[in-house]
Length: 467
Image (cartoon, rainbow, N blue to C red; front, side):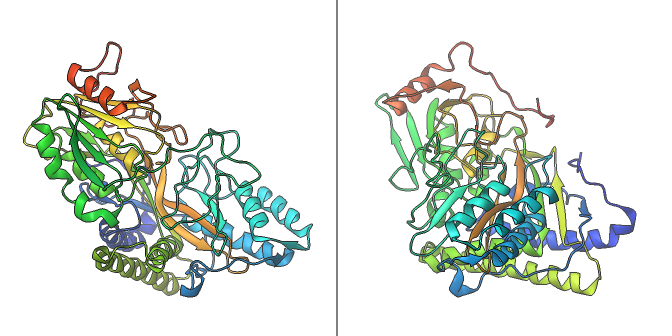
């Protein structure tokens, strides 16, 4: 049965929808090559989703960051310039931000008018002050949404509201001075630091239980991550094993999904997805990729794939801009939604042993997406601490406001846990909470003796409606 789409295609928009669906196919292709963002792999196993254009109609702006400004110094601006930057931020959100289900991607006109009045009340705005004001205006319970600036003293402010469980934003790839909610409001709970060591490492506990540490899903570690399905095939033959995901801040979901599917032959519920397809979204994702290249964050062996991904994004942006120019009033934003899709495991049979996945506050984004799949596999137990809670909005786009140099980082693709257990900013709760020392040895002991009394007993499902 094909996946259900929450968006219905108006009859009068059918031709435009087919055109956007073709561009969506190109976007999915570049996502599969992505070295900077989450992939669209879960859509690849399902029929093309229905599309529906948004009702907004506005002239298209260019949000491409000039090469010399990707990490440029910000500057103090006048109140008039700050108001123009506020409007560019509003435009970026309306055209590119996927947002959380049930929430508007941009603040209300009344909130924007209040922000403009506040900007007008002062003659000048320093970059950090403007970033904080914009953060407060666009705040949402989204672990990826962030504001700040580059330059000699870079700043990064997460946009989670103060009333939500605060988490620091994922650390940038290059060393930088980062602030959770800025010097005026430090985060109440810090994420676990990334753990040093190779991207993938297989060791054994004192009792001989295999322990596979996966420290990242970044495509910069593609050679090691490409071997994960083979690692999964080895682990399946063990009566018990541990997968250590502590400190894994995510990366390319394609690597995570392939690992999960290699553990079982069962049908699993894919994450629900809602993707923004627009010029702004493609340009913003290309900005993010170009900055990583400019910073030297991409290892030489990954650069050809990265450059290919960047070229595909820029082709999508150009094609969408051309279609908008050819059709007056063409929709600047289309959302592609897939819900209720099944993905089938690729192993030769069910998982026969017991698997313990060890997590902490450092597990985020693609790491949490992996948990959304493996928690459906019988015999899997998740132990440790809550994960970070930064999964609901991904595929990050970067924008730089042209006058002040303040940056926005926002997600262009929304995800939803098919079991309904994930909460943004709270993360996944473990089946068994483990704190303190010797966590790997304690996780290995759980893998050997099985789940304790009262721990959840999950099984593969054929219905993908949330519980």
